[in-house]
Length: 112
Length: 114
Image (cartoon, rainbow over all chains, first blue to last red; front, side, top):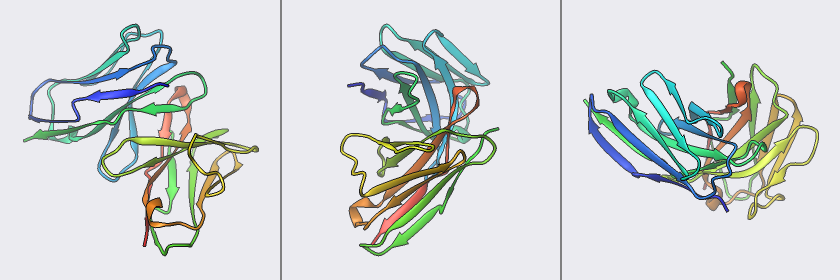
């Protein structure tokens, strides 16, 4: 059974720092991996989607990498801002069934 | 961009009543939608897959008679929590597969059962 783990569970950094969020999954046979952002009491916003054949995706200050063989993905946030404060979730899609298996998330606080 | 809405955004009800939550894809058609549940400070857990025109597929441990799902059209899925109890209090989020293979999530519905 696929399990997704995110480390750290919480992170507090001063504004301007570059930071890395980690995601690991137990079964490397995935279809794709997605990173989401969730603000308190809100739904999810898709940040980046990496297909299984890809190694990374970039969007603005965000860069996500994928190493399928080792079952790992990282989300890199450059020059963090207070507005980046949220919970970041990674999720894997095992096949084309569209079902997502989520990690427990990393709660990020960027201090002004 | 693709938008998914949910209604209501929050609901408070008495124990034993039934609550219906709607999930709509506003600018795209979705043959498949998903319902998730999220307890405080926990991640999302998939409850069921809602298929337009056919029965929903439930994840292990989710009672299909308690969480009734209807996917009546290509833009609407409903989740009905029947005979709700306090332990059903949670944040319910739906999603739909949209353009570019990305899943789009609704804003969620917070349910509190007294």
